[in-house]
Image (cartoon, rainbow over all chains, first blue to last red; front, side, top):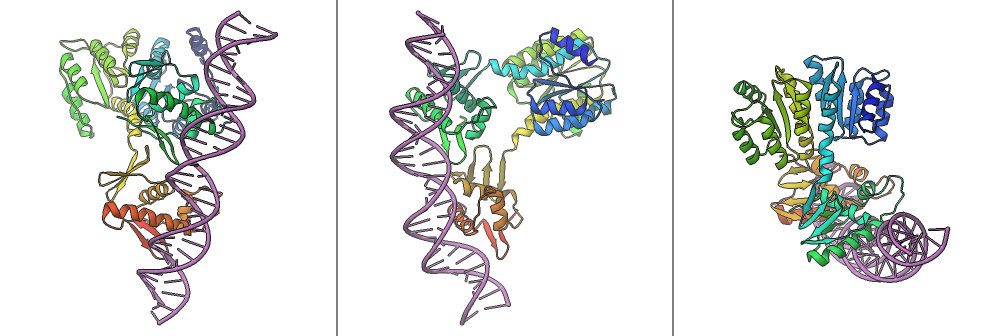
Amino acid sequence: MLSALKRGFIKKGYTVDTACDGITASYLAETNVYDVIVLDLNLPKKDGLEVLEEIRSRNENQKVIILSARSSVSDKVLGLDTGANDYMSKPFDFLELEARIRSLARREYAQKDTTLSVQGIVINTKNKKITVNETVINFPPKEYAILEYLVKNCGKVVSSEELIDHVWKSDVDLFSVSVKVHISNIRKKLLKLCGKEVIKTVRGFGYMIEKE
Amino acid sequence: MLSALKRGFIKKGYTVDTACDGITASYLAETNVYDVIVLDLNLPKKDGLEVLEEIRSRNENQKVIILSARSSVSDKVLGLDTGANDYMSKPFDFLELEARIRSLARREYAQKDTTLSVQGIVINTKNKKITVNETVINFPPKEYAILEYLVKNCGKVVSSEELIDHVWKSDVDLFSVSVKVHISNIRKKLLKLCGKEVIKTVRGFGYMIEKE
DNA sequence: TTTATAAATTAACCTTATCTTAATCTTTGA
DNA sequence: TCAAAGATTAAGATAAGGTTAATTTATAAA
């Protein structure tokens, strides 16, 4: 069934990783970023619910659909309460599974297509354009990514380390010096158009854009 | 069925609004903020899917579970693709519906709790702001960390060594003198706004903030 | 491929908030 | 009363963050 599902999803254009046992599943979930994880409960080596618990403890937002032969209400309730986002009992229909995956993934995708906005800054995440007071400014990639992350997390202090984690590729080893320079350059551009300091420094903690 | 569900959920401690037709449903969804909306597709006056589309266009993040007599795969796929987060076909089990609601609502709740508070001191761990009697004060990193630790452990005596362990990086070798100075500075600021000593000294043991 | 251009990073230097230390003063309990 | 624990103050040390300019790296055009 595993390979049949994989073939089916690849045909539909998805990128798929598979695991034959619980330990591999848990390892893959830890080391990769997935839109959705389809998790069979009946796994060798490590129980599916245990895998789910590990996934959930590591990442509150990971989307997980449980696939299980157990179809009783109590099994479903247990699965959902352990942290699954959805539960399908076998036998299931491929099209329904796909629709449920789409439904779970939609929100993440949808977010990418929307515009974010705060304090007069409007970010179109689709075409990567940033508008401030009707003026469209071109931000280079890193500056764009930093500003987008700050706007997405407005109202929260974001540390340099957090920025580096999210904006840079995971393999780079970078000093926060670079962040300072980028922040400085972003501020310069914003100040010209906003007339006020949008990015605040919270000394010792990081940077923040206030929520209105 | 509507009133039976309502009674059931209220008994479980949920707060529930109900609507008997599509127009009312759409209106309620527009004018209120709900953790989850359970939406029957077969509604008088306005079709459920139409209501769903309106909800979704207004709020990308609203959680919606469809409840429907139509149980074919194509109906489910249509419902989920229109923007539902989940789909249950009748007849359904109340406990399963509740578990699915919990599953959808879980994530929102998880994010909400970012403030600690005791004795009129409110600490927002997200933006690192400390509010005392409506006044926001800026605490430097060490002072902030010490106060946060004391508030987190209010009602318990915290020794200087414990503070050093938790507030300072593990590699520093520090005398407790520094803690004393920080405590003194924190007290000075709090006293100005509280009018009372919030941090008590327990001679020989450490410091404590009383639990109310 | 080479060249021109833009972008990212590093380095150097500056300012200043914050931290620590030491000296001194105050409180507490035997 | 008097040690010991704790509090306070102020001064020097430290580290966080900002800015500018130079260097390196990536990207696009010829």
